[in-house]
Length: 397
Image (cartoon, rainbow, N blue to C red; front, side, top):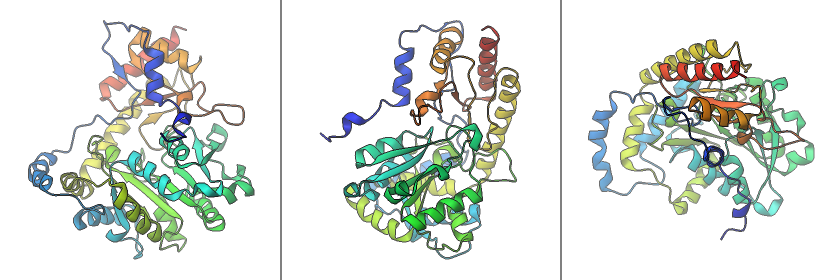
């Protein structure tokens, strides 16, 4: 077996199951879950017809690089979404991935050179795949705590020159999971300048880019900032996008990776042997989704309504950063977050995720300690009821 397998930590949801295993929740209350970021909104109406028309795609093997139509639909969306005007991005510079998780893990294995004492830098708390991929690739991880004093964004000034010299990947996650923070153009610019200076790759996980609260202020993206800086080939920059959150299709396992032209070309060669090709049926469905924006706008409106309802209920009893994007709240807890998670399940039949499970102890602290991650993915009524149960629990302490 791989010698680093024993270094992998238990996944947050495995840890959650473990701490709740001995609890029998009150049966008179319907179970509600705020723990898993699995979108529950209805599928777009037009998908049924697309599904019927796409079945024939099962008759043949898929190409690793994807169909021209699939890649063109993603390229068109990226250009429209981020106002890209240069010729650095076209369909030849886009590859399909089977969801962000698969793509992020594979890219790390491809990019890391284990013979050069590699360092991967990531914000903390973080999407756990970043750490697992780094461990298997033979890299060390440097955590940058995302704290209230830095608006829950990674403070790149805390990295030493020696650490930048070892850095092979800098993970950005904006909009952020779990804090909902959005990096500014200035912060992204600083990261790009550092990548050019120290020759590392920025891996920007932008799977929450289409869930934002201000319709007139979409989060900036890495490709967009590259173009503003004249980096038209997106050198040192790789971006991941997914349909799971944008289009409410987490089971489709469909996303894209794009950016640095040479890296994408070489990553295609890696994937030729890695073998993770996307089903032609999935590509046809994905193409239709990338080309439709109406369901995405409706999606955002529904999340806004849920945030409005839930924050009104929780504001009197909890403090939390006002999220600019994503579908999470990141509130402080009045007691230990693990104990509160157990209590909410035992007394209110509500599942939440302890914040410390999303982070690692760094510089003597765990930045997720005494916080919860609340995923507002259920219906408006269920989100309202879940928030009311939390408020009732806190008032009873």
